[in-house]
Length: 213
Image (cartoon, rainbow, N blue to C red; front, side, top):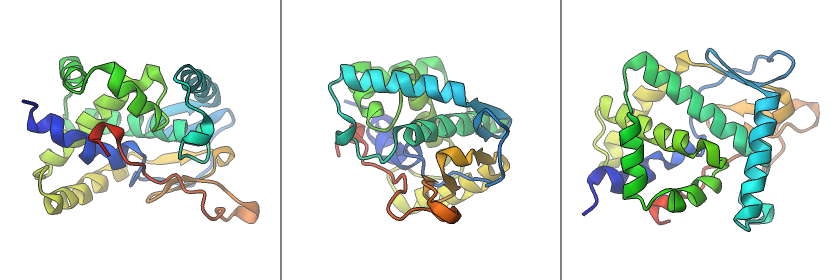
């Protein structure tokens, strides 16, 4: 029988792994930078490399860009890169430990990389970042529990989320306008002319295939 952790984790982590509710700052970033996350810098080159890998993985999986419910592949990939780095820094600052064994156990319990990989791909996660994506989900779950969440009780989860994201305000995100505007509730949104976000371009959370949705 699968553990409660395995049953609950994908559904609980779906929103954060889709880039919801991360803290942000609209200040400009230096030339050659796609985003900064606290003390971490994501360069345009790093993003371009992951986008190339992601597009190759889509081709190998025979998934067309039209089948993905994301308006922009570079923004979707960048969103995941930001999420992974922000939660990693949060974990380091707050003593939330996730071991490689825990990541491996989760992958095994969920059917292996053969099952998790395609689920991650639909979220904008290149294959090389799949383990980090799972690690982020585990950090998220442990952090919610740290702030008093019972993962089977939505009310306690919501209360813990407020506390968690309040703490994450100390790890600000800055994004290059080349990739849009960062909104704390919606993630990356495309900039229209005159600086206002274009309607209907939000990177909204997607159902998590790992949760059977």
